Structures are given as structure tokens and as C-alpha cells.
Length: 523
Ligand code: HEM
Image (cartoon, rainbow, N blue to C red; front, side, top):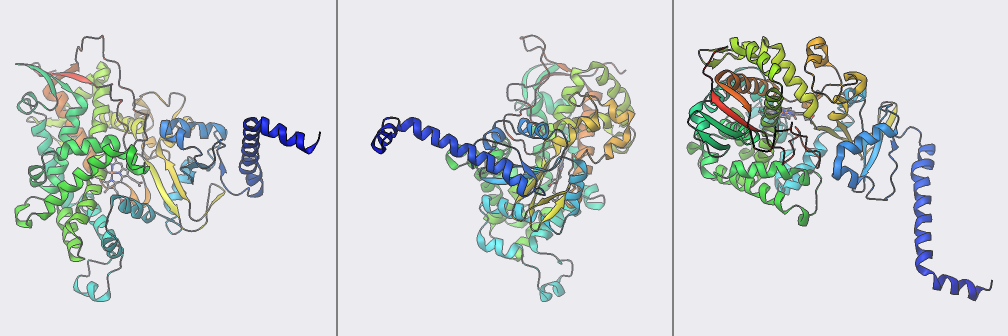
């Protein structure tokens, strides 16, 4: 064949040739990336193979991250060795072995959390002048004026939050107020007249949307106890904005482009505006705020932060605080109303925890193993948080070297659904497992509250508030699934359509409607 004929052939079949060329390149890239590189660098975590350079696993991750992570475990033969994914051009290590997650907590010198905090602060738009001072260590002169300030201002704010929530006076004060609020919220006068979550009512019964109700109680109570009444008074829409934010914040975490995340930006900006309006008011007018809020405010005002920057920090704080309790309570009650025997068992067990119509917290939190087991099993099935770290220096975990400059994640759900630990019925709701084997609550494959340095300091408060809500509800009322006219309500499914930050929500269409009526007969 002459050269002219060859050129002519390619000219006539250019589309086919381009296609064949692209496929060949793709095959070469795939062999290079997933066969040759692992051979050359056997100590690096292997990457889960994919076919699209740069985008990598992004599509699978955004469509259903849990499924993708399950596929990862399956591909590596459930050895639970560290592996890597490519998400939006970035390689991320994934750890799923409980020992590796423990080592991740321990590697505090080579793996850092600050890298993530800095990204989160940058994305929310904290000014560069604020970023500069937030991580500046106090000078000797500043320390001599106030020896309690021994960390950079940002770390001091985190430290105040931990001190607010660890067992002691600050927690006792907050927990007391929290329980009083729950006590009022779970009363007939407060339920029956409420239009935000009551769908229909008669003189002796109401039908409520369970998630709307638990969200209303827990989110509003947190707003009130942390920032006082003024936050909601200045901006009554703060609750609605938070709920919108809840639905959309995964777009923030994965930095979706603006045109795909207008709803998220709107909710975020509304919340920031609310906190800014709040901090612009004179301090004397903002009474009954949590100790943490007043300490954090002084700390950040002292270094010259604007109200806008303070608002952004507090918006992020309330996200951390408000993301889980109402959803965990939702799932606990959903399981109880779908399991009448369990409902009755918990009602009987918690009866002595309600004295003179008020919750006895020590009894509920220490003497109710079945309630505790329901709580733990709900956490196991619904917590979808991931531990995130940035690799500052090469770190060996699980026999593999994590390279500097990469991110590493430990998805807790992979630990909580590990059949080697939890048995063949790992996907079933089975609170008995924690009763039969109480040590499971402390198992390294059970991390609903995280671990290490960032172990959730709010876990004590959350337990008290959630247990009080559930016990008061079933002690004061008869609660059952409402007849919604389309057959029995099915059990709500987890919303796995977007990556959850914290506790899984139910699917939007899987609302749970409850009939609630004051209890007449005592058991
Ligand atoms: C059932 C309810 C809750 C669950 C499942 C939960 C879960 C978690 C998890 C998994 C972490 C660790 C994140 C990580 O490892 O990076 C965490 C951290 C945190 N949680 Fe919670 N949480 C709950 C309730 C609360 C409450 C009620 C508060 C406050 C009132 C709170 C405040 C915090 C704070 C401040 C941190 C950050 C701790 C630090 O970085 O030092 N949490 N939470």
C-alpha cells in the first residue's frame, strides 16, 4: 500500500481512527495506572480501577458513595487493606480496617485535621486577615496577660466547645436547660397547637410528621441554648435555612460548582446573615447564651475578627452541633413504632425513669440497657460520617505508605457494616446484639462518635436529650403509625442518593406520620 493510500484511508476513516486511538490510549493509561504503578510501588495503597482519567470515581461517589465504597471492599477481596480512589482529580486513601482507623487516630504528628479546617474556613469565605490571626500562637506578652490563652485563637475556640460539653458545671447547666426544653416540647399543649409538624388534629389526637417534629425540637433547642432567644428573634427563618442547608451541604463539602449548588449557597448565606445580625447587636441585649458562645466571642473579638467572620465560624459550629440528634431520635422512634413488642419493652423499662411526669436522667442513661441498645443499634446503622485527615509526612498504616500531600478518609459506615465483626445479619436492626455482647459498644469497629483527638464532646448531652425525648414520648402518649390511606406505612429507607455528613436522613418521600394521643390508661 502506497503512502498516499494510507493517508487516504485515514482521511476517509478519521472518526474510526480517532476512536481507536483514544481507546488505545485509554488502555495504555489503565495498564500503566492499575498494573505497572502498583508493581513499581508495592507499598502504596492500590487504586480501585476505573476507566475515566481525572474524574476517576467521582460519578460513582456522588451517585451513591456507600455503594462505591462497598465495591472497593469487594474488589480487594474484603482484605480491608488501605486502597485509593480518585475523586475530582484528587487521590484519596480509604481506610476500612478497625486497626488502621485506630492507627489513624494515633498518627497525630504526621496526619493533620487542620488542613481540612483551613479548607472549610476558606470555602465559607473567612477573610484572609482573619485566617492569618486565627492560627497565630499567642505571644509571651499575651500569655502573661491571660495564661489561660495558651493556644492559637482557633484552637482556643475548639477547646471552649470541648470544655462546654465535657462532664462538669458547664455541661450540667446546659443539659438541665436542654431537658427542661424537651420536657416542655413533648407536652400535649405544645404538640397539639403546632402547625409546623402537625398535619391534622382532633381534640384528643394529632398526626405529626416525625422528622419535622424532631428537627423542630432539637434544632430550635440548640439555637436557643447556645445563642439565646435573640438569634431566632432577629431571624425567625434560621430554622428553615438550617434545614435547607442540611439537604444541600454535601455540595459544600464536595465543592460543586456554583451553578449546581445555588440552593446550598442560599441556605449558607442566610445562616451567615442570621449570625452576623446577631453579633452586630450589643452584647447586653443577647442574654442567656452558652458559656462557649461568650468565650468564643471574646476570643475572636480580641483578635479583631469582623462580625461577618465570627458569623461564619458560628455557622460552622452550629452545623456540627445540630447535624445528628434529631435524625437519631427519628430513627429510634421509627423503629419502635414499627416494632410493637420492642415499643412495649422500652415503655416498661423506662417507666421508672419518669418520676412525677419528669425525666429522671440518671435512671434513663444508666439503668435502661434496652433503650441504650436501641440507641447504639440506630447509631451503627445510620452514622455515615467519615474521619478525614491530611497527610503531612509519609505515614505507614496497614502495611502501606500514605504519601505526603494526599487526603485520607475512614468511612465509619464501612466499620459499622463489617460482617466479620457484626455477623451475617449486619444490615438488620438487631439491638439484641448489644445486649448479648455489651463489649461491642467499645469495639474498635464501632465509632459513631469518632475517636482520638476529635472524639465527639457532645455525646453526653446527646444521649441525655435523646433518651429524655423517647422516654417522655412513650410515657405520656400513645403513639402509633398513622393511617395515611395508602396501606400500612413502610419502614423509611436511608437516603443514599447523596453523601451524608453525619447521620443518614430518610428518603424525602419516606416520611413517617404518627398518631399521638395523650395516654389514658397506665400499664
Ligand atoms: C447522636 C448525636 C451525635 C453524633 C452521632 C455525633 C457524631 C460526631 C462525630 C462522628 C464526630 C467526630 C468527627 C471527626 O472524627 O472528625 C463529632 C465531633 C464533634 N461533635 Fe458530635 N455528634 C453528636 C452530637 C453532638 C452534639 C449534641 C454536640 C454539641 C452540643 C456535638 C459537638 C461536636 C463537636 C464540637 C465535635 C468536634 C470535636 C473536636 O473536633 O474536637 N456533637 N461528633
